[in-house]
Amino acid sequence: MGDAVTSHQRTVELPALGPLYAQAARQAVAAKLSRGRRGSALPETVLVSENVSPDREADRRLRETAGGRAGEHASAEYLHVLGFPLAVKLMLEPDFPLPVLGMVHLVNEVEYLAPVAFDDVLTVRARAERLAPHSAGTTADVVVEMLRGDELVFSSRATNLARGVFLAGKAEKQAQEPLELSGRTAQWTLGADAGRAWAGVSGDYNPIHLSALTAKGLGMPSAIAHGMYTASRALESSLPPGVEAGFRWTVRFMAPVRLPGRVDLRIDVERGAPERFAGSDVSAVRYTGWSAKTGKPHFTGDVEQLAASASA
Image 1: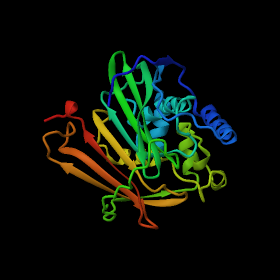
Image 2: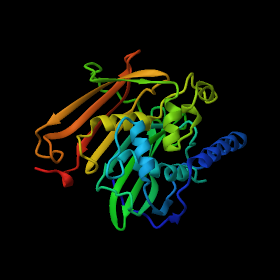
Image 3: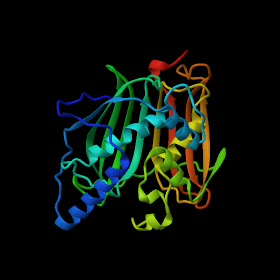
Image 4: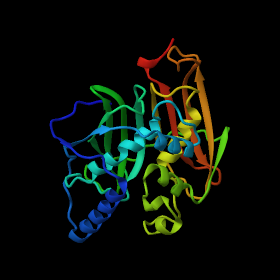
């Protein structure tokens, strides 16, 4: 992460998600009426929001909803949520070639480089990279970075898929490595209100997560859990005690979690490598979540100590 920022910067206020979803809906209607296409290249625009500070109470509520406890510094999942609206705003730029509504989140990779205090003042910036063909459409990465002065403290790269939109050709379908979906170490029971609960702390009121009725309006048979809710809950289950920064957190999304539902989770801890989390012998944590009902995988991911923060 951390590619050089171009000169195509524009400073904006950090937006709220609600108006952005309304804008996405208007764009979808306009595109259908005009039958037009918005180009085939990613914009060079870099959106920048300045003087952004984390909110301790918002972090606490979000972290507790994900099954964790408040910490002394902003959590990785909260920082992701804080910067997410700027990423959505970037994808709603007139020259962004992929539709936002219906976009599927495939992979998220976060590097939490240095602890962020609640009285820190951050600069948040977002850019798009890596337009690429996919067997089911086209993918693009959106990178969100947070800086404290000139120091990069947080970076998130999200790979998103626009299904059925083939701007860069069509790639062959890649064979999936088999996953071991057994030996669960925990089971989550998610109620029908899990999407509304996460929306209340994240601001992400995408209708596909809120109820069966609103999800059916978008072509889904039932509401599905926010991907970042399940990812955040897996992170809170995986981080060694006392670790708040200095790690890479990766999640790969597969089948969505339908609500209500149950998720089986397996956490595997790797120990004893030279690079390990300070104060423990843990070097990495791997996790896998799958449907307790169908046996299909929902997500897999890992939390790894960053080399620069490792303690021998």
